[in-house]
Amino acid sequence: MTDTADLLFRLEQRVQLLEDKLELMNIISAYGPAVDSGESTAVAGLWTEDGVYDVDTGCLSGRAEIEAMVHSAPHQSYIAGGCGHLVGPPHLEIDGDTAVATCHSQLVKHDPETRSYHVARITANRWEFARIDGRWMVTLRTNRIIDGRDSAREILSAGVTAKA
Image 1 (cartoon, one colour):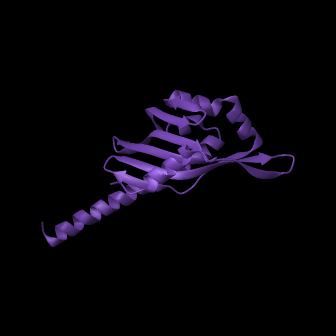
Image 2 (cartoon, rainbow, N blue to C red; image 1 turned 135 degrees about the horizontal axis):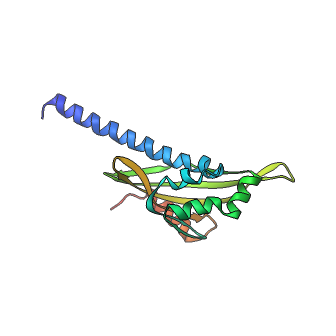
Image 3 (cartoon, rainbow, N blue to C red; image 1 turned 120 degrees about the vertical axis):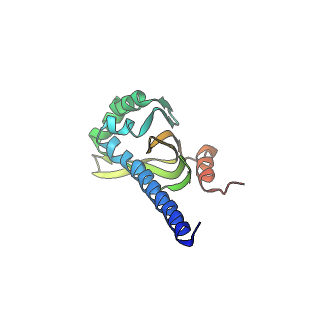
């Protein structure tokens, strides 16, 4: 390979990595606005058809169950009362057509009595992705409440610990 061809190859790889990271961050950052506005189709559309959303209150399997969560009475009460699902910047690891993102998220709810907001929960998040037909999609998202249990720390640690 010539120096120019090698340079172009390395630049192409770097640009692809940057594009992949940007697309993955856009997926993660779309979750909050979509779920807080009740856009159930947009929320579910982030996942593959058989994708899983594993929350410590239970697992949602497939887009239909994820859409149903957005339409559920508890979630609709969050929206009606004023809420924000805030997802922190992710630590991303990409390996070919799969990727993992590790981050924190918060559920912030409005308190009409005090006209203020409070953090209802903070969770550790692991997002797993696959590139399917050229598009990144969530295959599994695992959330665990950060309340002192090992499960949340394990998610955070696994996302930033170098692999042997």
